[in-house]
Every structure is written in C-alpha cells, then in structure tokens.
Amino acid sequence: MTATSFYQQQAANRRNSILLVLVVALILAALGFVIGYAIGGNVETAVIVLIGAVALALLMTAGSYFSGDSLVLAVSQAHEVKEDQAPQLVDVVKELSLAAGLPTPRIYLIDDTATNAFATGRDPKHASIAVTTGLVQKLDREELQGVIGHELSHVRNYDIRFALLVGVLVGSIALLADFFLRLTFWGAMFGGGRSRSSSNREGGGGLQAVMVVVALVFAVVAPIFARFVQLAVSRQREYLADASSVELTRNPYGLEQALAKIAGDREVLEAANRATQHLYIVNPIKKFEERSKGLFSTHPPIVDRINRLRALTGEQPLDGSSVKDLQGLD
Amino acid sequence: MEIALIVILVILAIGVIGGILIYNGLVQRRLRVDEAFAQIDVQLKRRYDLIPNLVEAVRGYMGFEKQVLENVTNARANAIAAGAQGPAAQAAAENALTGSLRSLFAVAENYPDLKASQNVLALQEQLTTTENQIAFSRQHYNSMVRDYNTNIASFPAVLLAGPFGFIRREFFDAPDEVEQVPQVNLNLQ
Image 1: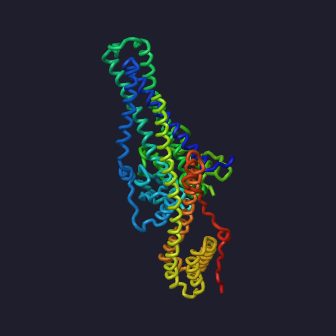
Image 2: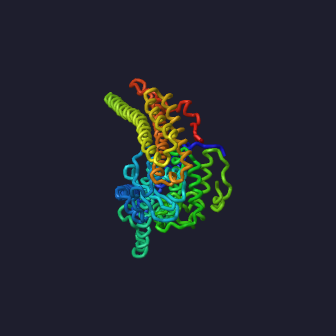
Image 3: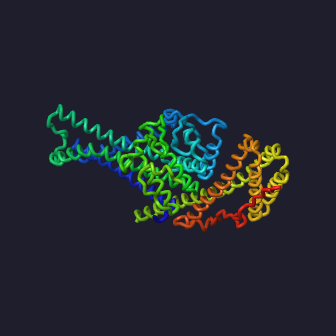
C-alpha cells in the first residue's frame, strides 16, 4: 500500500462527509416535493411542502443545538475528574489541547473497567471528554495520547455538530414520510378514491396518480436509505478523527496500539446503549463490533482503521479480518 | 447605460467586501503565528521553574550524589542565560540541561526509596508533560506558520499580501545542536 499523508486522508474524509450530507439534504427536498405534488396535484403545493420540510429541519436543528451535553454525560454516569485523581490523563489532555490550539475541555471519568472514551459538546469552547477508568489504567502514555487526540479531533472538526445536523435531516425525512403514509392510510380508509385536489384539476389527474405511487414508494424507502447514509457519514467522521489524531500526535503507532487494545478487551461498558454507541471511540456494544460489516455500523471495522493508520507509515496492512488476530499485536 | 453603471457598482462592491474579508483573514493568521510563538517560551519557562523543586525533593535522598545535582542546577542556569544568546546557543544549553536531567533519573535508579517517593514521581510526571508541551507548542507554531504561508502564497490573498506587507514566516527548525543525543553521565564511582 502506498503511503498516504494524514492531510490527504483528512481531505478525502471531509469531501465524502459533505457529499453524503448533500445526498441526505437532496433526499429530504425530493421527498417534500414528491409528497407535495401527490397531495396537491400541482407544482406550487409541491414547492410549499418542500420549503416546509426544510423549515422544519432548520427549526429542529436550532432546538437541538442549544441542548447541552450534560444529558449525555449523566446517562453515561460520568463524573468530572477531581484534583490529583488522574494526573497523567489531565496532563495528556492539556498537551494535546496545546497541540491543537484549543481551550482545554472538561474532563470526565466513567467508573468502569471497560476501555472506552467519548467527546461531546457543540464547539471547542463548550466541549467535554469522558474516559473510562479502565482505559486510564490499561493504556500507556503514547496510547492515551492517541485516544485523546482522536476525541479532541471530534471536537476540533465539529463532529458533534455535524452529527446533529445529519441526525436532524434524517429525522425530518422520517417524520415527513411517516406523516404522508398516515395521510394516505387514513385517506384510503375513510375517503375511498376521492381525489385530493378538488380545486386544481388540469394535468392533475394522471400525473398526480403516478406521483402518489412514487411518493408512497419514496416514503417507505427514503428513511431507510437516509439512515444508511447517516451511518456512512458517522464512519467517515471516525476515519477523519483518526487521521486528525495523527496530525496532533505525529505518532500513528500510539493510536494503532490503543485501538488494538480496546478492541481486544472483552469487557462490556455497562453505561453504554444504542442511543449513545455512536459517540464512543470504539463501538461499546460488542456484538455490533464483531458483526460490523459495511452498511450497518456507526464505526468502521477496527482492522480497517488500523490499516489506514499503517498506510501513513507505509507499513503492510493486516490481513486478518478477525478482532482476535489483534491480541498479539506488538 | 444605467444598468451598466449598476453592474459596475455591484462588482466594485463585491471586490471591496471580498478584499476586506481577505485582509482580515491575513491579519488573523499572522496573529495566530505570533501567539503560537509566544506560547513556546511559556512552556520553556515552566521547565526552568520546575527544576529547583525537583533538585530539592531529590537532595534529601541523594545527598551523596552532589555532583549530579550540581550539574543539573548549573545546566539550568546556563540555559536561562543562553536564552539571550540566540537560538543556536539556547538549543545547545537546552540539550545539556536535558542530558543532566536524564543523568539524574538514571542515578536515581539506585535509590528505591527515592523511586517510590510520591513527590519525585509527581515531579517526574510534571517534567515529562512539560517536555511534551514544549514539543507540542513548537509543533502548533509550525502548523500556524504553514497555514499562514500557504494563505499568502495562494490566490486571491496573494494579491493583497505583498502590498500590505505580509511576509513569509520561518518554521521552527531545531538547530543541528539539538539533533545530537544528550549525554547521560552515570558518574559511577
């Protein structure tokens, strides 16, 4: 594998993320248009519904934007680190904040022997990093730098905000599709075949019927497809955070070893669940990690992440596809 | 005729606003470079301040190793003085200081009580993190310089950079003295 630089990896990841977000936004717009046409039978209604869908998404974005990170931290049973409780951890976070030119985030500890970490906060001034006590004990300084670099990079690249945006778009698609399906369901139940656009019938009839079918199909398929895109975006941002971590530490080995150690750890992080899994550095739900093949996962497979890190130094990629092969990684 | 006039005015307005935005971007990047440079000194001074504490904490256990302790104290004084003599002299003095510290920690291996001392462990962690912070602050400075240099060389900022006096900045490049491995003197008697 030819060596890439972390700048190249970052550029590719950012490009892909933006493209994916555009795809989701287009899906939302198209869904709005198609549903509007199906309901109203003319282009004006279609455009109105399109604008309404986008406005709804913007409103939801504004609403979630200001909800703080305290909820996530409470759910994960994190408590702020006290003086002298973990001096090396605090020092490492300070060091890497210096390297990134960011203010030092608040540091939280999760009392759990599992090894994992996450970052939250809408921008670098309001950021927090949470780390399990198991991670602090099991990783050495180099590996800890890699993990903290990864989490700090999520903050640096505004990934939390990004994920919020994508989540809102996907949520809007789901809402809109749901609304339309219920509309047609109840309409079919109680209204028989009555046409919906009583006022505007020119050209409405045949095309509108087609549009109704298209809208129905779209309304069923779009939310699922948008969800896949959301997962793809999440994976891209994980790769980006890995490459950004290397930009900070200039040391791919640290993160590589840390990932291998975290993946090889069999312990389950009790406080994590499906709602928070996407936040962690490695998917804390172990059965997802082993099954993670392509489309269904919030995180890329560990072996792929390690191979991308190895590409930075021109090393041979691992060919084992099983996490078990990582146990003896040097 | 009127439409042509309006079009010209709009284009001019866009040009002026664009120019202002680009100029502000240049100023911001140059200031980031200056700030990053000042940060490096902050970290260097941290190290100078930590060392006397270390020597005192260790002296109680290692009273017999006077030479090693003296070397550290002298090397620190030299490094502070060399700050005024230019980067090459400062780098050489910093190197000697690092060497004397490493000798100190190597000799400390002989003193199990010392190694277990919480004070010394905490100080050792402090010194490690300070070394890292110096390195990271230099790295961050280089990142800011890269960003700034790229910006003033690229279109469209390049049009404004020359006339308004934005010149290329130098990367922090450790002089050759630093690339030598610091000498560890175990002072075995």
